[in-house]
Length: 362
Ligand SMILES: [Zn+2]
Ligand SMILES: [Zn+2]
Image 1: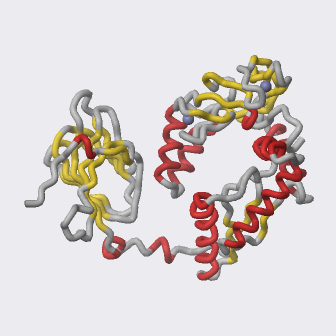
Image 2: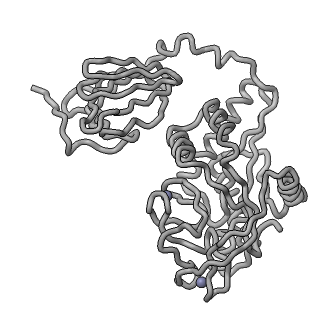
Image 3: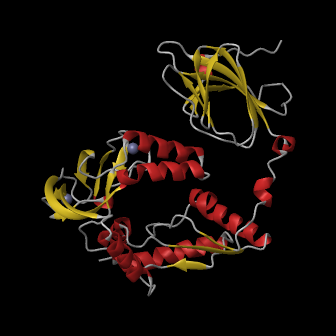
């Protein structure tokens, strides 16, 4: 007899909850569907997500609320929900003490997409610029970079061209980051030399992967980049969208240096993981460096003091309503959507958009 039991030891974290995959099943022919037990702890919810498969939830125990778009409905044992492909759904356990347990079954079938053709037939733009997050020239690209944004952008550009759209794929190297300078110094080079060498490596890797760009922008070699950035900041400042404020910042007494990005590390104030300055690579949330826990200067290893510095700030919270509306209207990966929701729920921070440094755009 083939039998599997809901087994706490087989549960693992996925989609913000705990799941136990039921297939592949040893010695059982693989079915044309996937299935898993899913356990939502009290007060928890599944990650906002959408996928190409159709899916059915069979609720076995507990209670909660299912939200799909603006609709929400109470959930209890015995309820069954069908999710069409690309339907954004969240199931929340509203109980304070009891797990919400459901069986999920999903399958892929082109018939499920019937009636979804309007999108593909919709009026298409004549001209499109495709871009991807600019790589930092403090190292060559690894397979994760390539298979993530850069290959995806290349595929999308080729697809648009096949549909007669005038598509241009453009990005460049993020030369003005502090990591470029600290890495160049480690290589015994000046910051511009380090940026040149690694940007050339990155371009060679992109070519080797046959990722074809219309333009790979080198900010400090371009006659347009620096004036455009300066004009952009000037306009935002004149419109009152950037604020000049004096705030305490980490300062290393030993190195006599303002610490940010590459010059400071500690633990993320949001998730507790080891983090560099200004952004946690683990949870993706920004920090202001002074709020890093157990911070040290990366050059000398000493804990920093604080000194007031005047910087330009972008008060992101002013735009919470517009951002929420925009995020609702665009397609995003489940991870990015969940990050946006977490940041929005925690209150959008004011972001320092200038730093006290000798490397960057003056
Ligand atoms: Zn973090
Ligand atoms: Zn130091």
